Image (cartoon, rainbow, N blue to C red; front, side, top):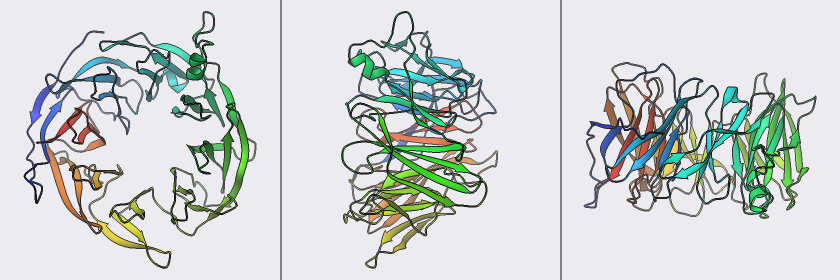
Length: 437
């Protein structure tokens, strides 16, 4: 693969001065790794993958399309020029979702890709020196795979890959096989040896969502699956043993009725009420874990929620995004009350991170909802944490950009400051906002 760079400086952003300090937190440069004249009518996926592919201490980026036949692109960060260069690019006929994993246990991060009509999981070997081998198939399914995920499900210190096929969850033990010296590649084949760990049933016809985490807080992972059929929603929870097998329904089995077409679109685990037990949050309601391990459904229905200690008092606050950004705190009576309301909001969600490097958590968000004017601006919103659940809004506009389709935040260049990588809604372009002095 030839190394090509189409990166150019395309705009200098006006910075801001952080109060009470001589340090500046300015978004000081914006660069366009893609040719700014190249346009497309499709969007990139919501979350570009940021990972150190060349083991040089900075983060490279993999951007994949949300629609078929749009380029899947690998950018490598070039520290000498403080820029991103394209090292691989090609069309895909599937989702292009990519995860990073050392498939062959050689110490280099490889790429695992959901490709061909979203039925094939393949991988590209990391050859080092910003080079990757040809795409090679690991697994083929008869039906489309909606997503791929990685995690150490059996607690052996090595990540497995799991994914839904039809109404079942399949796990591939490729990395564990390699490290047990059995060998990932058996004979002349390179296929993983997957196994079904959760199978659907006739009653609950659709597998809607999957979450894994240590809900019992005993050091072992549980796999939580959400199913629905007509107006009935159910959750099943199974726990992995040290041998990698799944014991179904060790905690609870929940059924409840909801309006037709309801679906579990978001799942997360957190201690909502501060009782030391992990609770389940979904867009259809919250479920509080009881002392016996069962889940009791609460009254609150929500949009996606995040939980963070924003004011440093040792208690979690809830961040809810809908028509605005609402921050809830738990009062002395055990009820959630609104502490702060912020506007504007967007459909891109909130990133909670110490953006200005001052030791507290700030809120960062993409463009406001319904920013549709072709003469509008792509906007990054930063809500600076002032303490006591008070926030000061800042915004950064990019002239000529209608709106960003997604943002990812991380220290891209290793200078200790959080940078922003943003993809566009209607162009094959990626912008990088460099943060710092």
